[in-house]
Length: 135
Image (cartoon, helix red, strand yellow):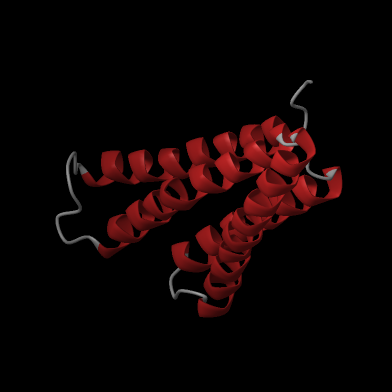
């Protein structure tokens, strides 16, 4: 059974991760700061955008691919992927700007938490259904 949905979102998110990384690296080079943030608020903000992405996206993708492997409905996996992608972009944009957009940051986190909650519950339910089906 080919895995066809999650790799699309993983690929898009990987490219976005590189973009966030490049923003941190570019600012580090411009400021001549190789480690830490040396008190620079703009660098600290970019580091947190990058770090927050790397803290949440992998678990969401694990839930998505698990659901896909357990033959969850296509609409569910796509729905989680769209929510994750939109949530991570809104969060990064909201927290990454000065002044920060609390509204976009909040919407981004709500969407990300929705993926974690819905994906987590759906994984448990799908695993139980598959166990019952398998005998």
